[in-house]
Amino acid sequence: MTRLTLNGDSIESAAATLAALLDERGLATTKCATAVNEAFVPAAARASHPLHPGDRVEIVIPTQGG
Image 1: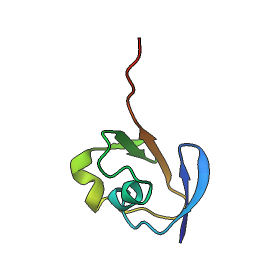
Image 2: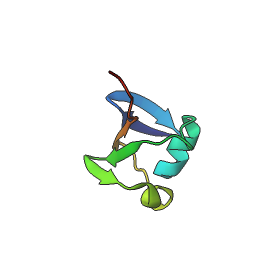
Image 3: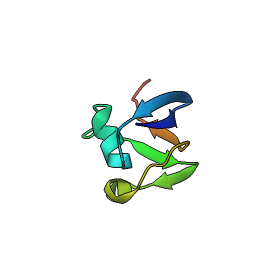
């Protein structure tokens, strides 16, 4: 297990990549924006983007409103 910060909260995760973290969180098919340590990670790079202890991950899901 790896300790990460996800959207400001400390979590434990078994995910080795950003794509695996999204899958673990039930967001694998959700349209979202991702960043690791304040650097944008495009959807095409998530499967190859490794996660390391202490990484700060942001997942932003756009919402519609009026």
